[in-house]
Image 1 (cartoon, protein in one colour):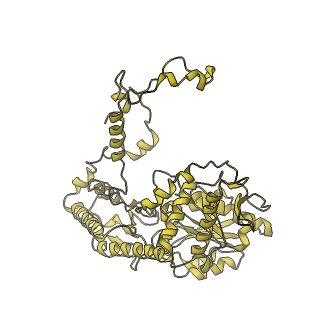
Image 2: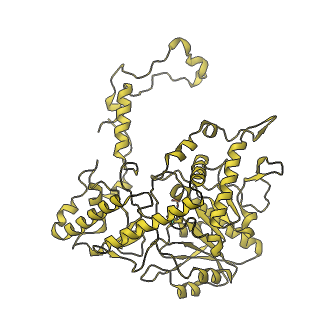
Image 3: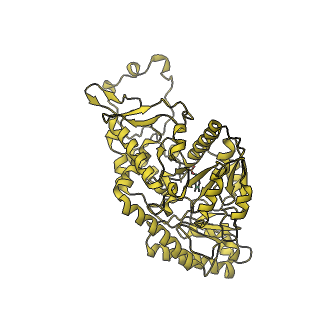
Length: 481
Ligand SMILES: *Cc1c(COP(=O)(O)O)cnc(C)c1O
């Protein structure tokens, strides 16, 4: 495929600027004017449209095909939420506009959306207060660990470590370490559930807290959760709920009611923001009453007269973690999604996400070894060990690309050899799931009878199989003639 510069032809163009109406000298200070014309591609409008449309089709997207990437909740995001986020009244406000203007309201609507979204998230998590500031799940984790540290400092607690199961997302230990804590890792048993006895052994007076994903990264809901929480609370530790898997329990379980003290949610996973390629995201953090003073500033407040303001007067706050209102348009999408679905809708979403995952789990058990004997929550994990000799999970993933499906998450969680982690989400139909099962069975069979065909995959994608290490280390991103 050609680069846009290669389509250039001298004198061709797609726009006409009325010369008599525009004077560069008046618009740009003379010392900033360039001496020579910029080397820009000279292309017609239709060439530009075709070029970028073609480029967009090289991208894999959930708008075109099935995207069962585990741990990421790549579901269909309702267009109504996109429409809400595109409203000029919302996306054309400037974050530095004053909140109030004499005789009128300027950013009151935007502040009200923030305020209401915080209340809704508090309601569905059972926690007292939320901040919408963090710009990703990992950013929310770090914010939370900083708040945990502030709490312990305030109480004069001497705490040195945070406990994290070995199935955790890599951001958990990274956040704990960045927040100044040692990480104590607890192994999981053969069913992917953290070992309760080993967990209790790890808890002592120096435990600042524990970070848990529930259901965990294997899609398993820990049945001993209450006991785990009690053990941590007994030493004045704090329980952190990694809410990246909230799609499994929305409207069914409130982390706050289970006893969790602090949590993050990923609005870009569960609440209607398209994601992938690293962002943008929002990782709101919710806290129980005793952690409220440490929330980052600014806080959205509502006065007795019903006026919304930003409150910076929080003496115990951990301070600023993000500018302005955070990733505002993502918050708008989440707000629209929450209002649209309501209590029943959210619950139905999780119910279907769990049903779809269990359907795949049972169907695929025949050809792949499932990690867990029992039912799963919203995602299911297999091992590619059962594939034919010399064929690995990587080959399976590449072969799926040729069949028009995005690969599941592979080689994660780390505690499962040759892991294949599938999250179908609630937005897929039975027909799509059945077609996927057919592909997986076909690949499993070929891994025995025709392994070479899998080694060659992918052959239908814009680029074939890359040396992934070299591709990441020696990136070639510069346009050169
Ligand atoms: C995605 C994810 C995170 C991190 O969220 P980001 O928004 O990608 O930073 C944390 N924990 C789990 C379990 C996740 O799946």
